[in-house]
Length: 452
Image (cartoon, rainbow, N blue to C red):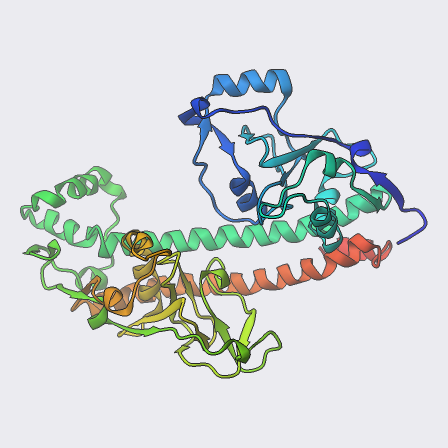
């Protein structure tokens, strides 16, 4: 930390406040997004969200005209619960409002303080220690406006703040771009799965071309296909030939493509339920095999290596779909390496060995698996018998193979993006404490800026 660094108290360099009270009666079905702490936390962590609450445009305009609303460069900090202290910089002048008490709002920064730099300071171990030290309460931790105002720390000159902010935000921008690319690729593959295995679009197209009568429950989907007109691109002949041109009725599943069979997960997939070894065999030193216990280990697509086990009991192979079998039930990831799994997970692979079909099949089953959330005495869970009894189609191996050829190419891109994303994240996390502490200074920063 150089001699040109200077000490500030946050209330002297920014305005610290919260929002005006919004009541339940102010909620409307659609309108201006209203964020609680969880929506802000998800945005700060780069996770995809959909606003669940809204207020009317009139109410928002009234508040904004009298008291203002968050704008580009402002900071919101989660203030209540075990995820207090997570900060988010508003990226643009988006219209939204937020819940008082749950979030603390920083705005009107001094010209000597860069808000993006401040947000990274708050994310650093030093900043997090300060925030944690200022929390009140025992059962429910909370940050207060008065506590945030009194935060006292040293910062570098503005030019250096901007350089630090540029380096870290450039890395974050690249991370966010990779995340969005992965989301788009996954959505494309999931849409293809739904088209082929849920909506039966290729079968409907062939039935419509042949002039066959469409079963009443499928007529709405058929009308959608007709409405597409020329946008309804035909499949390549070698793929279209794999699908029948008519449907048959089954007691278990209603109308399904002719020749397909109603089966279940137990018949069509290999399933391994996890088992937890003694806690004494766990370590964080890389000794033994990667060990994943449950949803807490999951990322967007792949679990995060945290714990290893020297005496694993149950195993998953690289490419297996890992599914959470205890609250929450049904969340999925893919094993990036051979690993061991605890009782909070199971490993699944279709007997065709298609990891792409397995993954998108289990993602589609999430809506059904959600019903098991209320099945446990305290926490939701699903056992092996229940899981294996869930419906699945049989006698479709050739179609699964065709799906795999298409979806696996997208999945390979997701894997490459995910590996690059991990490197970018590790680089950012390694630089953050060095930049915030002053261990790295100009001209070192200028070299990093050029490379970034």
